[in-house]
Length: 328
Image 1 (spheres, rainbow, N blue to C red):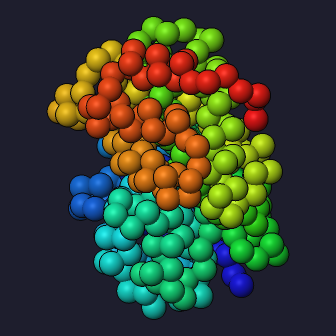
Image 2 (cartoon, rainbow, N blue to C red):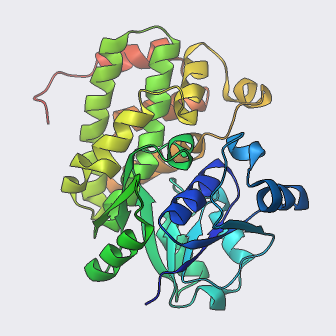
């Protein structure tokens, strides 16, 4: 199958960065944006200031208001908007085409992973999951970045990874799409927790301990969902968890910091805070853990804080009072 043309659906920071990466890999890229001003800016000035400031975009990136036929599709919209975005697309456009899903989250109501939403809306598309430690600004600027690309067919996944690989963007192929999806969704929940620890001035020791226990909790969830725990030792697991739980560039970490300072979800959102995927994913992950009978005290703690049932001090005290046991 040819991999020469790419259609990226979503003109935000991450969508623009992935369009840039694909162009640097030698692909001809169409970036689907929302309005004529953004369209004109990308096609004339080769910038998308709303998303990436003054970063100059590759000449192989052009903008469109509608999705166009392509060899590869990359869907880059928030996790809770995936179904709506696919509703606006003709499923025939995606038939037998690789669709790379980059959103990290579980759908409210259905508890569906992103690939399950795609299967509902475009059953003849070929799903791939892109995840790993990466910030849009780094990818767009050509700074070294390594990620995971997961699919169901090893040879096809490797071929697609090679097509998207450029001088500074390196996708590693994986066949564990469940593990990659669950890790990507849950790391945002744990980033909220780590940000809250920072905001509450509880110290680096507490944050490091939380990351370690989050890794163990994530492993239990991935295993219960049918994914491979081995995946968590790689980029989509430990790599992404570490980045998101330690950097103020992470929206989820920033949101968590505000929670740790005592602000409510409503106050943070009204202040103009950017979308944090973990806020929507947390209650879904908590319900999922209960349905799977998985011990997930960290997810439950974040859910309690987000829902206003507890504050950071109460949650930390509760976690520290849990019975001592052997580390797993």
